[in-house]
Image 1: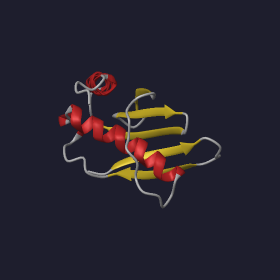
Image 2 (image 1 turned 90 degrees about the vertical axis):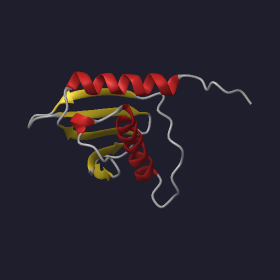
Image 3 (image 1 turned 60 degrees about the horizontal axis):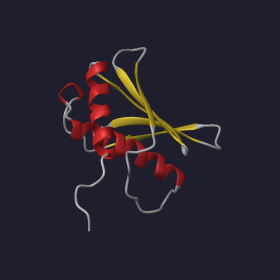
Length: 118
């Protein structure tokens, strides 16, 4: 499944559209791992717009603002904002509360310190 992402970078006066590949399940069947892939894909798409032609960097799911909003034609969208700019993905046919719960779990899990100390 291709996920559409609209991206606006700070310092620009236009938005671009990109896509995230590799999500295999329909939104109503998503797991936390699928949601993690969508969020990481959104951030990666923003980074690629900011640094065209450069190699992908690691993605950290910390320090971002997010919201799930109803979409006017049905479904919901995920909107995130970081200092680099903003991205909106969707629309997705999934219950708003279910998606919010998954995003909360994913971000909470990512904020936990690693259990191994080297």
